[in-house]
Structures are given as structure tokens and as C-alpha cells.
Image (cartoon, rainbow, N blue to C red; front, side):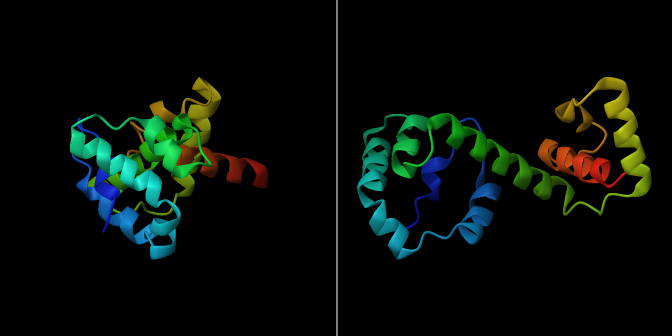
Length: 137
């Protein structure tokens, strides 16, 4: 039984996120048995028609607070959404790196605003690319 559908939100169609998550984080029998009580609680909420909130999910994960679960989910959803729309990003060219460095110099680290110029990357990917190359210099 797969429980990934429990993590879908009502305001988005996230089917393109669910399949890659199944591959990246398979729910093995060990994980399911370890979290059986929490997963059953989530299923019970779903069956009763109540909305599953991030606090419910964090109680299953146990090692994360609800805000951490939400941020992780949004980052994964954003990453797979960009893969779905633009495909795998090309390696960052020297020209793109210079553009990114100029943007940071002019506007500061507004990573989410730079997505308009580099839509195939996530904001965290741009941050890590910038940090990697700024350390090399």
C-alpha cells in the first residue's frame, strides 16, 4: 500500500511529484511497519473527510516539526515541477554565472526573484551554484 497520496494538497495537482518521490523515497515494509500507527491515523483522517494538516504529518515523521515538513515538501514539489516544465537543467555556463554574480552584486541575494531569469533552477540551486563559484575565486 502506498501512502503518498496523503501528502497531496487540495489546491494543486501534484501527480508529477508523487511518482519521483516513490522512486527517491520508497516506502519499504520496514518503514511502513515502523510508522504504521501514524500512517493509520493519517488514513483515518482522510477517510473521515477531515483535512490533513502538516502537524499530523510531522507526528508520523517524528524527527521533524510541521514547518520542516512543509518546507521540505514545497522544495521537492518546486524541484519536480521545474523538471516537469523545463526538463533537466543544463550545466551552468560561464555566461550564466557572470549574470548571476552581477544580479547578486546589484540586488543582493534575492534567489526567488532570479528564478525569472533562470526558471529551470530552484532558488536553492542558484544559491549553491553562487556559493560554490564564489568560494573558488
